[in-house]
Image (cartoon, rainbow, N blue to C red; front, side, top):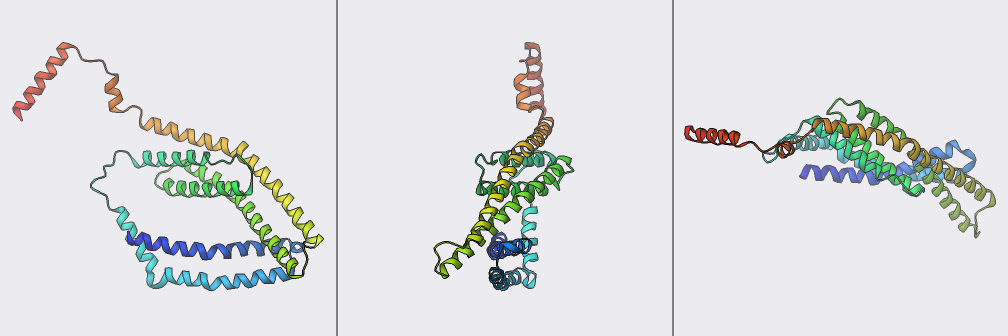
Length: 273
């Protein structure tokens, strides 16, 4: 629909504009907490770039909020989603559908647990965790489910820890990039020894944090996810104990007398119809 396309385009603009600003915010926060790790020159440079990002963000916000367009488009899209289709027959309860969807999200996330431990693989798992958490939150609002709340809290903790790692990765890359650029400007082939030692220490700490977090995910988080998934599987089995088709297949064929009575009853019903 046109409304969905418009909203998607605006959100894509917002994502593009906010990405650089978010990285610079992380960088400035890191520099503030680790005052010895970044020069004042670098901090001023990052502050300048951050100020340059702000007009772009404000322009995207104006597009979204101008004349209530976002609210208007959102309402139009929701009204289309609320309109039932004549071709779709509801064959199960909202609770059953919600349980199936959340179970599917958990199983999908379990396949994304990284085998190799790197900042990149953990970042990819963080994105999967975020998607699963938000989907579980939205679907969980349809039904009162303690398991959905437990899942959301668990994934929020994972998302927070992996987010700290990603922030540290972004900050370290930008610092090393700035140091390398300064060295080239000064005609040096390699950065100063002091900055190299600082970066090396930060890389070592980051590597240790990555390994500890990966071990925590495999040893503590994965078993909890598997337990929650098993709870949903049990709920789904209780909601669908046996289909009519399976029950009929398991029934013994009727005896001749029973079959004759059924045939007679069917002829009578056709005659009176």
